[in-house]
Image 1 (cartoon, one colour):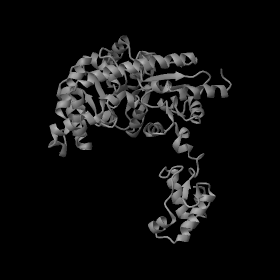
Image 2 (cartoon, one colour):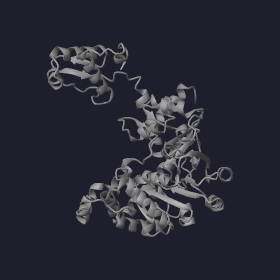
Image 3 (cartoon, one colour):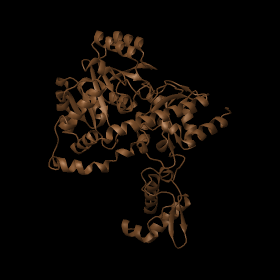
Length: 473
């Protein structure tokens, strides 16, 4: 805080100033929001065991800083944060867009009235028909005893049986012993990285690609190299050159509903990637978090390869609920056993309650109907979002009939980070392309856009206002 920074080093601030700083920090942190009534002078004096005059002096300081206002007969009320402009680093985070954690923080925040075009999830109302309260009693009735103990290192066996059938619908044939349940897809990636990636190892990733994966690999001390993503999948020529020059062991990729571009791999491209994997002894980790949004007949590397040189990672966060945190790994049985041991060492087990919940949801007749509605809503939103973006003269990287994400270059925008700053002033949060690059210092004109948020009138007005302010049409 400014008052605290002005102190002479080594001198302890007066008690009243310390109390004012404490309350001001609580206001900064959102403990007290604009319009909230602060505790009374007597309450604070009793809480901190200060003299009443000390508390009065602290309130006078807060009033002088423009943080609170006195209201006769009612007490003191919050006006706003101590440093609203300076809080942009934490709340907006644009100065830290090169930091992978920034967008993760943005994903977890809920700002009333803000339009989250950066959001990585479908709208809550799309998932509302899979309400968790419908299934709780069934979960408790079928497993009350086991819910007080750790689960299996592989995960809840009936859910693994359900997943065998679900993967079979994709044409991916796996036995229960080839499946390990995880705490979401992110734990699945963590386990694979811990198992295969020693410090200094070279690993390939999609570029642009899934930014938390980049952070995980950096934490592991890996050397991360990007394979350019095209509208029909990885750039095969670039992939082959990297395989010849670098001899990496792993390639992390998303075949379908690619994050952030929304692109799908073509059958011809998938076969070429698998041929290169065979030739260069490459193991492919295929992350498929939006599987439920795509037709079961869609092309997947793991389906074509049947887990010979592929590891398949799935999740229910996008189609059921992110709060359940249930994901899984499908791979050969020997590797599955090792990964289950590694999981037991790190986390003991997953949440059997959550795993039972997902199993009940999969077995209920509501699930298939939910997927039909989910795909219909996504298809309609994608078509409408593309139509609006086309009308604005935007460039769209890939066009899929059903895509939660669109990778968009807005007209006249050379740096999507600066564009994000403009829109943030209009209460719109964007996901600038730099975040999805292995080298985030490189300027990108692209932004990842959630199709449902593109249809929000507040976003559309903000874009049009920003373009007019910049002198655009």
